[in-house]
Image (cartoon, rainbow, N blue to C red; front, side, top):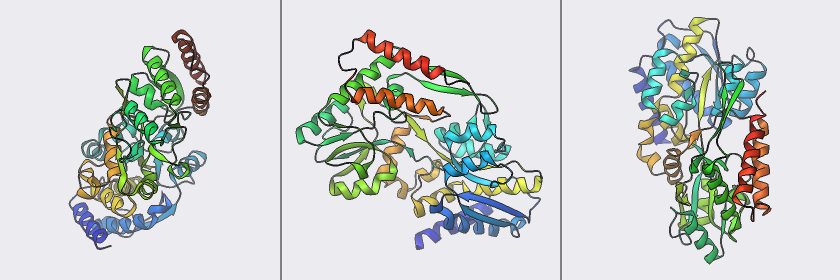
Length: 400
């Protein structure tokens, strides 16, 4: 607790030296939606912001518990009735822009965001060259957890599987998930992204799965699934006899309890000579467009504060949310977190998850299910290319 208040005081002192995007003041009401886990923290930070910015001392800020997924859906359904500032995940950006739920980030604040946050999070808050939100975390993605008494070389998937087979342990990877599956495709050099227009509508697709790179990825997945150690899944709570598992930071405590002194985490390994990649995920704060320019300036200033480096670090210390701020990422407390360090290393090989149609996820699941059911084990390269061609053509039909 002492550490938290020390960080909070440092944040207050730092903010007093910053010039956020307004000096006109505002004394009206502002509604903020954040995840339940950080409601109390956010209330404390709002008071720190008001103390450091007298122009906003009389502003009434109501912080409500609305998770990132629900916040985006609620804003899209009713922009006027939604929050003035709200947290959401990067894959909702295009939908929120299309709904008119996001104000473009104020120019001077955008320059600070560009300078102070990691490249992945900066890319995630943009559509084209336009910045629509403030990065808050770089902590949503997957990497490798492993039992270091079993796995002798965590950098190579073939070696990991061999060690797990020898020890009678399981290797978990959710091969029928469109999110995890990209680790192979993107790592091998194939891509599948959708283009959105300025209103957030899907208008195009960039898919190279039906290529030599895509074929390489598909053959790797088939090979991995053939291993006696392979188990389809990504939830540590539902896993048993773990030698290694591809999972995220949300399961770090579960795995530390399971593996004890043999707990270890690192970036994803290589397979067939290429580094596994995949999606990176980010949380961000958005500001709703306002009729009142003074209120808009107040919301911009508060959002900038709540996503500043010192507040990101304080949020990590309280709730373990991984910072996107470069300076906060270098803090010893963050560096000592083995799961976050593994994720940070893996994010260098990922791309932010953009907007994907719902049908894509079902399509990817069907492909993974066929692999798990051994339907592709004896297919020729030509037959596998037909599978990939059909996948790409089907994915393109989701453009309305």
